[in-house]
Amino acid sequence: GDGDGGGGGGNGEEEIGLVYAASKSRLVLADNEFVVDDGQEEEDIDDGASTVETNAASGTATGYNAVVVAGTVQDYYKDNYGNIASSASSSSSAVPESSSTSTSAFACPGMYQPSTLTCLAFQEYEPATISTSRNTYRHDDTVEVTFTNPRGRVDDWIAVVPSGSIKGGKVSLDSIDWVSGWSEACGKAACSSPTTSGTIYFPNLASGRHQVVLLETTVVPLYPVLAQSNVFLIKEPPFSPFVPGALSYRDYTTGMRLADGLDIKVLARVGYRVKFDSTFSSRSESSIGFHRTPDGAAVIPREGRDGGWTYMSNSEESDGRGGVFAVQFDKFGNIENYVQRLGRTTRNCAGGVTPWGTWISCEEWSAGQCWQVDPEGRRNPERTNLVEISGGNFETVAVDDRNDSDLKFFTSEDHDWGALRRFRPPRNMEPGWDMLHRPGTLDYLVITGRNTFTWSRSLDDGRRTAHDWFPYSEGVQHVDGKLFLVSKKIKRLLVFDLDRMTFTYEQTDSGGLKNGGAFYNDPDQVVSLSGKYVYFTEDGGSTPGVYSRELSTGDYYTIFEADDYNRFDGDETSGIAFSPDGKRLYCCLQRAGVFFQVTRKDGQPFEGTSMSLRFHQMKDGEPRKYYRAYS
Image (cartoon, one colour):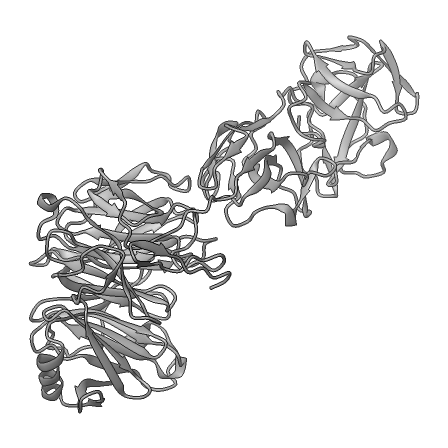
């Protein structure tokens, strides 16, 4: 019943309470009658003052918190630590003294009293149960948990704990996996009504032996266990080398050929409603279809939540039909929601993320602007001062955020004469939304020699430099004081050292790919995960893909690329972004209209923090592997 925990389930008895009196007897409900379950027909309780005879009291206990003892109603109660006593031995006024001889005349005074004592409501409940679907799981499996909780209180919840964590029918606060191993019983962020049964899913659990427990919420750091599952094992992830360029795996659903050690999964398709697989979502799908012409994107951690992130994605539709759309993921990487955050704009190409966690979306047309967009939708989008009010064909925004009091924002322009802009807000201004809407200093990159550059207030000088050195610039990314800029038209990557005011450049189509793949078409967007590699999308050709460049060596590698020449001819990869833990790479095929994620089969980040496998090189036709214990 509402009782004292004691292990909580799986014992097959219809237990309604434990009475700690002189005899240590236990009261159970059998055939709707109170009897003493101690192997005897009668037994003294309450120090022998009265006797309970078998079948002495008939009728259900529902709605009452009393036990008939030799024709007298005797109250029992428990304190907040689960200890049980009778009102005869207490001076508390929270539980009234016994006086009635009829159970029908006695009503429970309430489950929660103004003192530390609470009434026991003896009600007929089947024991709570909880179990997992299997005893053994792979490292990347989702654990399916089913439970029954007949008492169905709104604040009961479910948690994953290491095997052996249950002590005296309770678990401690410290033993619970607060990152991925707990859920409200209803499977949502909060339960609005009691949940008596259901199925809960736990992905991304750590390797080892675990149990799932159904817990009662209390005000103390020890949670009573209402039911506990079998012990189950999450296996260690197998060693599965990630070998960029070794494109041995073909996924027929997406038409992609992937590097060794990678998996791919379609998350959404253009025009179709987005399916929600998060237990935190109250709906099964979005109210609108996935947006057309998906382009630049970024992942931004969600505020005020225990994990989760938002994939902010532009729509490059023309004539005021563009905008920004948000795919919201929960902390397990499951889709929770899909909404529009900016509308009535034109050809939203790419953009960038601010240090305070908003998205800048840039329009690519003659009068295009760059808009600041709140991923959570708490503020209306607003035009920024990153570019001239006259507008232009703007692409991507990068931020030099090494010094909070001296932030610098860089914006590229996809035009033959598209200057690279630098916006500097007022110095010592507090970083935040308003920083991009106040007057600042706008200047332009000008190359002054073979490998040197400066910043000028002359837009004309900036345009001449762009025409000569990086026409139709696309992606721009800041990594540790260096600015990476891609020129699509001439397939060039320029790297500007912002401190030394020097630069280098190279061709992206020079045929220098390691292991395999073909990066011969237009480089487009460029992103970085941890500063060890930069990743490129590709526009045009029949095998658009995603490629990377190792910064320390300058070597290029293929992550994946299209393998169906007819299906993807003239298409482009877009919207590349990584989840905050680096384990999920998100990307779109723009014209095919597919949004997907790529993961490593071994469950590790693309640039792992432990036991990371560095990118491999091929020598004499064989893979030569480089390992590092830590990255």
